[in-house]
Image 1 (tube, protein in one colour):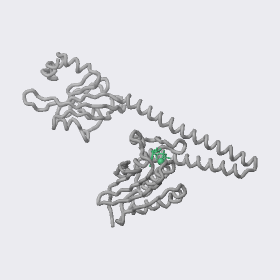
Image 2 (image 1 turned 180 degrees about the vertical axis):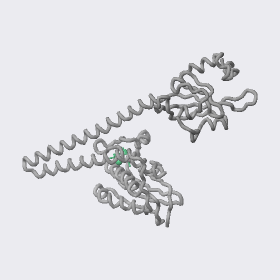
Image 3 (image 1 turned 135 degrees about the vertical axis):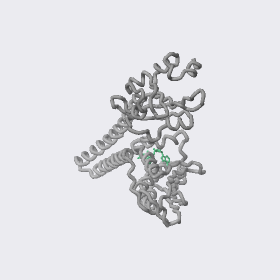
Image 4 (image 1 turned 180 degrees about the horizontal axis):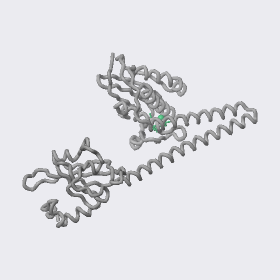
Length: 359
Ligand SMILES: Nc1ncnc2c1ncn2[C@@H]1O[C@H](COP(=O)(O)OP(=O)(O)OP(=O)(O)O)[C@@H](O)[C@H]1O
Ligand SMILES: [Mg+2]
């Protein structure tokens, strides 16, 4: 059977087993020549794009007027390598369609030159849509669950508040108010996190001293740390310089990491409860490190930490802090790492490339 395919050219394909295989195969297949014209297509392809013989590949697949920017077929014509790409096309009804496409070179028997490329496309539109809907459904369920929990909290607070008024008990009123306040903060945190995750990158970079941002975050949390019996220290790089950063974004990241470190120390069984905020600067990279002395994170959880909605804090965590932090850091072209190689505790590290550094 293979021999049949090898010996047949597309001109006499119609008489071979290979031709039948080509015509009836379950994926969309088209053979294009060096001018990117379709010289042969199979049934599945014709069903999707209509009769396309002699037409330009990019017109048929994508309704473009010129060759695609990063045309994989062009590369395969040059190096003869088989390529697999994910591509988005437009079918004959104008519907966007998603494919996994294999680009396979065809060689001339005599000259050994690549004369044609076969594009074999597997339509994954339905599959992607199903996955997208499942992901949307899952996200909505998680958000609904989080909101429901907050509502239960608010109801509890309101009940206490009402009873306090009825019984003229300032103690109950205060308790009720405290619960409501806590739950309003939860709503605010959840909404802020969701907005951060859904927004497109809109970094507002300005020249700023990284130490100033880190110091502002330190000042915000030092009282809470002290109250919880945690030693909060800073160790800032003495290289005084300014770097282009999104101040609010980096501030948010450091707050997320520091509040996590404080939570971890609060529930930690270790006698030493220390957190250090560290800044380091090299020629090319700015690094912020938040060290905490609390127990290490089990290896099996490490990969999950950065997922949206992953939290081990029950009602006290939305599970968005690290996901948001990673998003902001990546928008800066940087990376967020968890380093657990230290003897005790762990370090969450933000490393971003230094843009337009100034002394
Ligand atoms: N320094 C840390 N030490 C131990 N565990 C941590 C630390 N930082 C994060 N984690 C773990 O990672 C999980 C996810 O953190 P993340 O900040 O994304 O969400 P969260 O703190 O639970 O909620 P929130 O969205 O309110 O910040 C936490 O629930 C916790 O289990
Ligand atoms: Mg957090």
